[in-house]
Image (cartoon, rainbow, N blue to C red):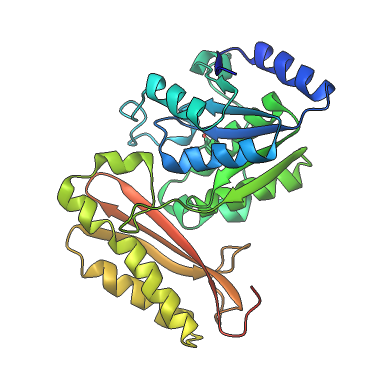
Length: 289
Ligand code: PAF
């Protein structure tokens, strides 16, 4: 079956309601386009688990701050359509900003209080409310489905899981593993902004995570020691400017007093133009898998 592009909300709803009434399970992959292998892996996971796969491409203005890259955010619909078709997507939802926000300024906002203020939220104060608002809207447009998100944006995934549960939205949120380049850099649409030297320097994020994981696996129980390990490695890389390097509880995203049996390492740094994020799940010695 060839991929179909649907820009109108009403057409998409009609199509997906009809599929569900025939007993079909819908899989959904929300994206902002400029797709890479990480997105393709979400699409393939959705293809494997569902009868009909819809992906959306929408660069959501609400989740960009005033000084961020909304106008220059990379876009390539033709390439995105090909990649989506190859990964098994049936329908690409491609709304305009006017279709999504017909009343112009949006007065309604979904905010997930405590999870949204720390880490990424500290640097990008309106980002998570903009993201949660559009994802809620997309869930409402697509309807009951399984929705696939990468673990690369771990705080985003945690927030999406939380508001989906808090608001009893009939969507099963599926988290999928980070896809990395051979040298460990997590794939991201914003990697395209990196110069060749910055691209090399950017691998420090993953190296710092792996070094910190080894420290925990060796039995370290003090979060400060683990966080200093990551910070020290990033500080030694002249092209990287550390924003945060933290070890957190995987659900609350709070730094614990002692390393718990299962934790998440979070890291963010500016490397040239883009702010890059990465994270890693770690099991301490004796912790449950
Ligand atoms: O992760 C993204 O690409 C975006 O934040 C999302 C989830 C598609 C919402 O705009």
